[in-house]
Length: 108
Image (cartoon, rainbow, N blue to C red; front, side, top):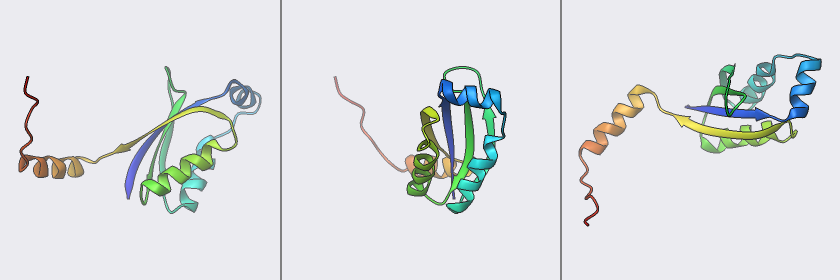
């Protein structure tokens, strides 16, 4: 499974609905992830450009994309940004592969 971080921003209408009737939105996303064969690890709310982020595992990029498309389809999110996360083990494997490669720098 691959791990993904999706940052999200709510619409003003979504914030108004949550202020009026607070709910754990992590439960809804966890259920969606499970239906797609994935697993949500956690949801966090943040300061700044995005209102929060969710960390989840999905079997592959296509399934992760399906989860995000399904999550934004109700229209309560105004922005999302999904980043594939790599474990230290995966990153070290990539570094080991890169070590064997030669790539020339631009000449100027």
